[in-house]
Amino acid sequence: MYKRVLLKLSGEALSAPDFPFSTDVLEKIALQVKKIREMGVDVGIVVGGGNICRGRIFEDLGFDRVQADYAGMLATIINAIMFSAELNKVGVKSVPMSAVTAQNVLDFDKDEANRLMADGYVIVFGGGFGKPYYSTDTGSAQRAKDIGADVILMAKSGVDGVYDSDPDDNPDAKRFDELTFNDILNLDLKVIDSQAAELCQEAKIEAFVFNMADEDNIVKAVKGEAVGTVIRF
Image 1: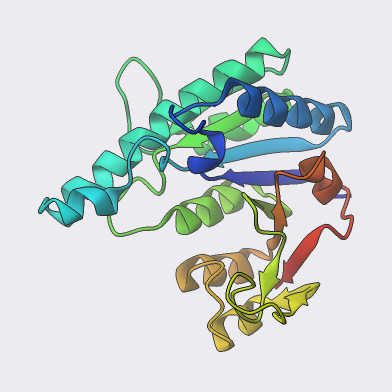
Image 2: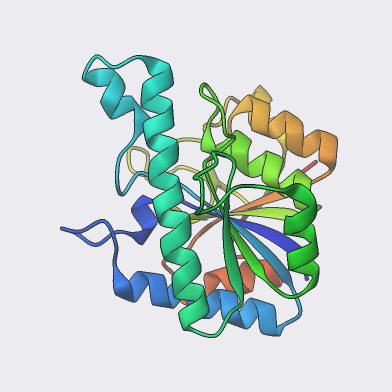
């Protein structure tokens, strides 16, 4: 079983069909995090912002890439505040932090994050990497390194691991049970970007790709059960 984890959630995973947030999904994930904390596992969480906006949409509208990326980061801050509040509601001590400072609301401090985690808090990180031109993958890898996580739990919606080809297009696609980050790079598997993979290798952090929609799969992943693909350094 992993002892300290970084859970990566896409913004889309938090959404309802016609609204940026699903109260049912928020509660379901929060209750799984509560179970993990009750197992004695430290938890940090990185949230995306795709349920509110994605930077590339702004690019398509003709905005500058830097402005577009910052707009996407601001969306992740909203999600961090929202999910942290949900955790507190179900009885999990939680604090949101952000690499992009929102004055009088939240910011990021590595030492404070580790102090709070040692005191039993779940930290929900928004703001991505805090700079344009970096993906949420890279932001997640950096935060995992900052808190000394054993693994990045890459909770996907409708995807139960890493395949050698797109299973939607190829019914014979093979799912890998285990890979290395070198395999990911050499086979050009689009599961984590190269910069994030290099950060994980350097910091000796595993990644675990699994389908978060299946019952209690986040808890099962923390226990190391075979519910997806493990990527080792």
